[in-house]
Image (cartoon, rainbow, N blue to C red; front, side, top):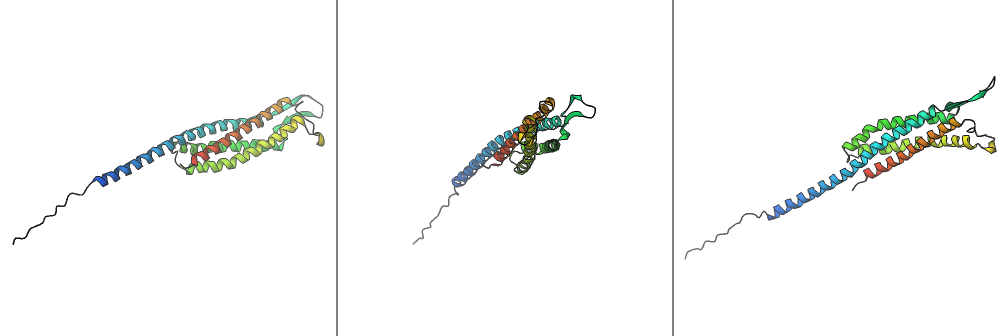
Length: 207
């Protein structure tokens, strides 16, 4: 009796599963790339706005410091022994204001390269974190200088009857106008800093 031979046919391995897995992986990579591109796009926009805002803050702080530094007025009348004059160096608070706001302006200039890096690499967290921490520290200096100078300007305009401090702005009008303008400019700079801090916080937010 002849033995029957059985033949088992082994087909080629199916590539359907592999192809499907490759498609899924490619779709995930594509979605991740699109998400990263979209995130980098809006973060680059924030970085550009950050850079422009720093330029505006530089102009504002330099203006505030220089206006306060040049604030001086001499009354047209004088006596043989007295000459009525008012200048920023007559007030320790105004001297502190000039130095502090000048330091703030210098910091803003030094922070520009970091801001440029955030434009080139909008997804980089390190330079943005450095700016956030530094801005938070420097804004306290700017705020303290502006607040202290504002208190003296208020006394110059209104005086203090309880301590017999008389207002001097009726006599030294130009001087008071200059120092008031400097305080307003420094206050605007503080607002700029607050916006910069908010921008950095938003840019550091992860999707």
